[in-house]
Image (cartoon, rainbow, N blue to C red):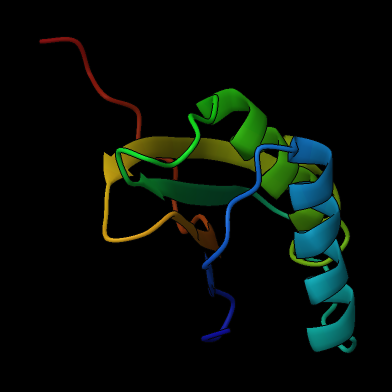
Length: 112
């Protein structure tokens, strides 16, 4: 945690989304016992790193598991997430990096 921003790196990836959700959720319950979820809009960035040998993960399933695990710890409800970016890249090892932070302002892209 850095102020209201959360940065998390999970150095293990499982093909079982349910198991992944419970692992992250348990981590938050143990490590952030005093953390209080906040209201307001949030933005969340998730980077899924994989190797050619690692299992393939659907970005939507990973995003759902991460948002469910952050609910009640970082924010009250995942409906508070107004910006979500999920990317899958090749890396040195299978891992997931997550950043969640309150949005300071919502910018709408104008049509060109």
